[in-house]
Image (cartoon, rainbow, N blue to C red; front, side, top):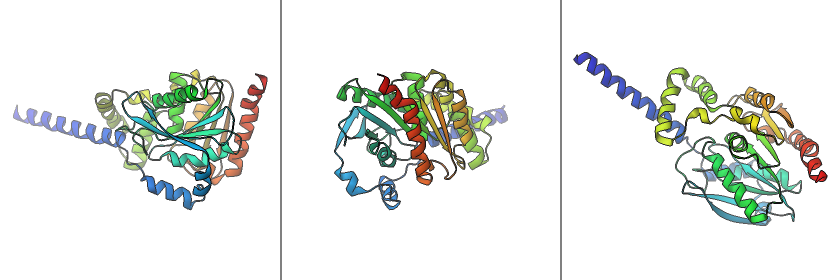
Length: 307
């Protein structure tokens, strides 16, 4: 009897320890320091601080439905109704989105860069890899439409977790933008976690993920299976440009290819030859710009001209 009791106590202790450890790693993934991101972008030549400071912009705080504020910069050098909202990846912040924004500023768009919950200057205590972030993205979209009026040509660009957030927003909440660009998204968060557990820790995902999922449900009120862009991709009717680097070994390019194949309607796929995770633009700038131009001409401006 005592042996059985000790076994049960030991099992419960191990179960709780594993659940807390892995749910903490998911909820509180270590972020990059904001100054590090800023210095990295400047030293790489992707951020010209003088040019950026001269751009007409507004700093705004938008209240999230979850009790914190989202910090955003609305950059408006053009008198136009064309806007793109940019969603950064996990551990990054809005300054990582400037290089993408510059691409669209050069094409006559205005831009909004913002910090996801728990990142940069936004509030929020945990990261949910798109589950709660998708509602925050809706808040940004709703704010823009209220501020600028409903007559917008609106695009959303996302990198990594930001791309997954964007697809979840479009597939689960509302397909409200005119076009989307998904740069290196994961197709399913459970599959991504299973891959990273094996690649980084050599641990059995089939045993650990159900435990982590249970603790995420109890602590954050969502399930890992709810963070699955491929489960909702069929709901997105608007055009999507899918981008991934061939050599990405953090989120495999097969995930983007699966999303592309599943997506019905207007779509385009670009697999960059150079670069690892989230480096498609940095390492293939001319090709990246070319495919964006082709996508806009084929699926966005032609529709705008027809109005």
